[in-house]
Length: 117
Image 1 (cartoon, one colour):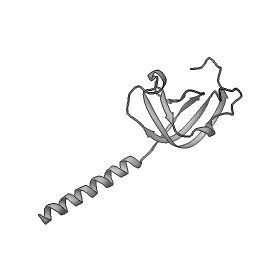
Image 2: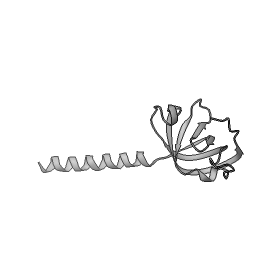
Image 3: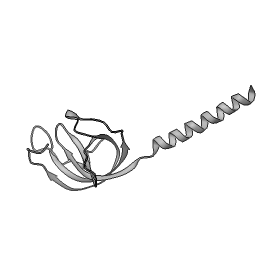
């Protein structure tokens, strides 16, 4: 009985440490970030998809010039966690949700035409 209890304890610790390490690792993503009063998404470089953004991207956005808030595009490099495939965002336009944990780089910031998505 004592052996079985120790074995369960060791396996539990191994699973928790392995699971924690996997959950903590964030990946780096690059692409074009679009934002307005309603949407925030990333067109990831090299993929024909849109990922909804969850996280603070304020430093990648130009100040608002209209009451509806800022509208624009920025080339970004971010660190974050990518969620599973599905239908996310307004009308399910995003294939995934990217939870941004760190904005690494923001460049080529430009305002969007109001006709943008």
